[in-house]
Length: 84
Image 1 (spheres, one colour):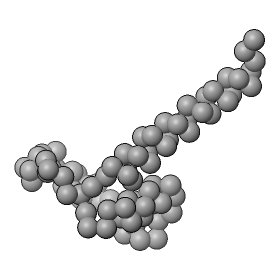
Image 2 (cartoon, rainbow, N blue to C red; image 1 turned 30 degrees about the horizontal axis):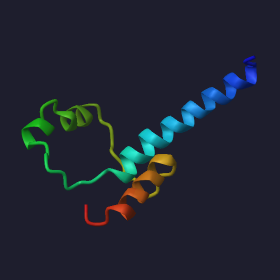
Image 3 (cartoon, rainbow, N blue to C red; image 1 turned 45 degrees about the vertical axis):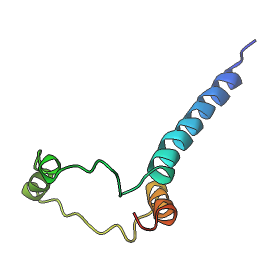
Image 4 (cartoon, one colour; image 1 turned 180 degrees about the vertical axis):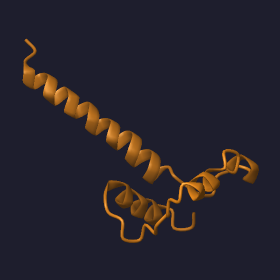
């Protein structure tokens, strides 16, 4: 019979599995900057994101002293792909 703890462990397993498969594998292991299909500058500037950020007065700060899981993934990505 399924108990409440079975649901808790099941939901926890799904969350951890998704985190490992999606975040770790996608952003750290398989990520590379030297892709065979780079975006054209026209596509990157299509929605004028930089202009929108400047218009709102948002300052984009350096991420050198940032902390958290995405920074750890970024550092791991740099180690796995040092040339890309």
